[in-house]
Length: 418
Image: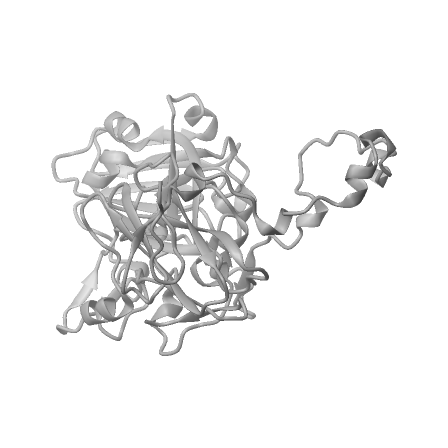
């Protein structure tokens, strides 16, 4: 079977599956391995002495200390800031709990689950209050889904492309398996009144973060999470209770959840008026954007990586959409003139990270690598020019334009606009 190569060196996504390949980096076997039997080989230190004993909670290898979140906080209020997931150092689709991105407004509260309560009140027939112990007894569901801050990637609105590792630019997005109670179950128990149209969720931190959600969304697929990636949610991710709103901007996934107020109108809080509202070219303001549109990013190779040999490489990245499944990811190596379909790695789930891969044969040519995602609604990730034409120059939130990495003849990578 012949495999067509397009401009820049991209190969058909099935290349690695159909061909028996040897990477040049491992093409020769050291002479000492052929001259001695395995029993005669020199033993390394870790093969010559007993290893460490058991621990009560496993930790990453000390040789992986570089895989950490980059953090940025307000110097005057250290609890107000952000940490980014190091997307460039991760594989698969699940973000480890300890690397999940964070956005805090007044620090991480140290909540005692024995005294924490969740209250449902307002336009309900039966106001309810739950202890954590009560909630742990309810039927649960598990779902793998992404959470993305509405301000993720906002440096893309800047006039000049930012030069920083991909996680420091796009890393306010993470994907976990969340386990908890369908919100519909709790709302049915409280019995919504006919005029109930909005749900106002409030967190139990010092900022009393609160946001509004349409009741239709709350009943459809939202849930109250108690577990993340199989263990109880960690404090920085919302312990002991977090609202999960699949596919919608991160701000509505309220952490440290303590109150659900059922109302006929939204609260029009700070994060629904002064923030998350943007002026459009038409002169109108866009409010309650909610959905995170389809997006993709090549994570490897990306800024900070170095190609130090000629030959075959596997390009890898992530795609996601708040409107459903990713159905296609295309990759270009010639500034978007031609595109080739990447392989989508199973599982392909709705409102979840999808890992994509495609081979590249590189022999020192200067190229520009790009990816664009299509979701099951038919929406196609726009170029930066298209996004600015649609949204104008006043944008800050919901940046999802195609990202371009320029690979030089020396194997160095930089972020460029197309």
